[in-house]
Length: 47
Image (tube, rainbow, N blue to C red; front, side, top):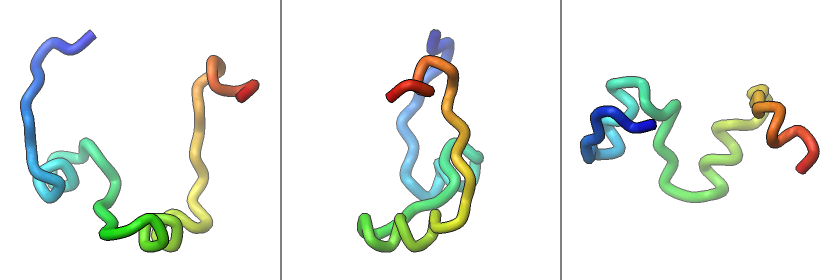
């Protein structure tokens, strides 16, 4: 449930810890994420 929503820029989202990073392309994103562990919830475990 969203209790308080607002629109923020990509840089602001990083600053307030809503996202981990901003990447200019898919390749840059994959390079940046390489080696990091991603945890998914149990509802996604069988996908």
